[in-house]
Length: 142
Image 1 (tube, rainbow, N blue to C red):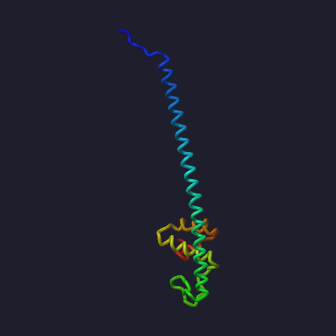
Image 2 (tube, rainbow, N blue to C red):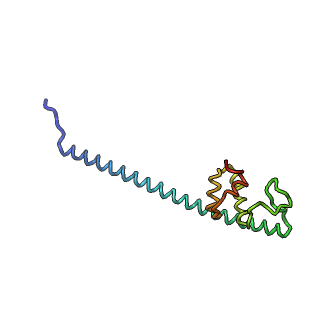
Image 3 (spheres, rainbow, N blue to C red):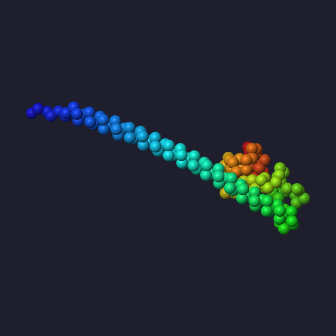
């Protein structure tokens, strides 16, 4: 018996099909990569927007607290261990600082890392040097 040989056109069709499948797989990977990058950008933008909103709300709360304190309605807020006659925490200038300290404290209590807190303070409050606030809340960096 003579062995049957596949027609050359079947081999060519199989090669073309393999090339098409390979190209489709590469295209699919490219689409997945693009989608992941777009999702990452979207999440970063959303986080930045959330940081700004939280900072704004914290500034409002700090303004109200300062106003109530000035009117004698609320006891002066001081860091733990500070003297009652102290004028407030060092470097506390205005409600932005009070709100930033409030956020940093909240994040520290909830277990956020120093780096995470620093990023939120930079993004939400536009604070360039966060070391004073971070050192006051978390202690000096080792």
